[in-house]
Image (cartoon, rainbow, N blue to C red; front, side, top):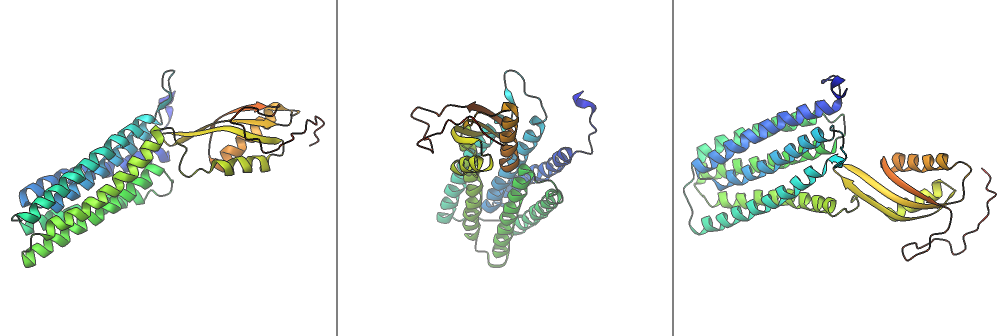
Amino acid sequence: MAHAHSHSDSPRDDNAKRLMFTFGITATFMVVEVIGGLISGSLALLADAGHMLTDAAALLFALIAVHFSRRPPNTRHTFGWLRLTTLAAFVNAIALVVITILIVWEAFQRFRHPQPIAGMTMMMIAVAGLLANIAAFWILHRGSGEKNLNVRAAALHVLGDLLGSVGAIVAALVIIYTGWTPVDPILSVLVSCLVLRSAWGLLRESVNELLEGAPVSMDIPALKRNLSRSIPEVRDVHHVHVWQVGEKPVMTLHVQVVPPHDHDALLGRIQHFLEHHYTISHVTIQMEYQPCNGPDCHLNETQPDHSHHHHH
């Protein structure tokens, strides 16, 4: 049954194809840059290759996420396998930090003992890298029709990469025309800062997800207020938990409500509100008629009234 759908029409498959292409380009050029960096003796190229590694990894996670979000959850992994991408992102971020430290250390060594650098070789490879990045960016950007977080993130990565390649080109030009080799370690440190920035973002997001943190963009107190305002029967909202699995927010909450005529209809309205305003489709709601008592309740009203004759 799952394989009945056609493989060309859905935007998700289109995204996967796009990510696949870009991943191919990026991964290939990463290898080219590493080899080129070693041959020409350029640290800036190696730093840019490090940056391309971050991109290739980001693209790979995006691909894995697209793939796994298709697979149905099983009884053991009830959320499917989406956490895997978070874990991978975490490992990737740590690897990036290590790469950055190594490159900065090497740059420091080269300041003290400058090394010969083949400017022309460096130039050719940097230009090729730039073209590869432009191609990758173009492929990803054509697909901005569907706002997929992964695709957007990948496009941003590739844009950062463009800067890395431009840095390497500038360093190569300086070396060709003036022979001043310290420009290479200087620019490699700058490119490393770019790498560090993406690593830090990845680290923050993945740690937040692994620690079951609420999505950064979500304001829980505001959500409580809006829910009480939009649905008059809702007296109080407490025990709210929001976390993220892959890209899907998941939520549980308790609501104290005026005893409704139609329990399911009210539940439906609360669910619709959360889906509509917060795009939370996976929510578990516990409805209560008595005021919450206990340390975690923080009831808004001091005197809840117990009027049961509630008119619509």
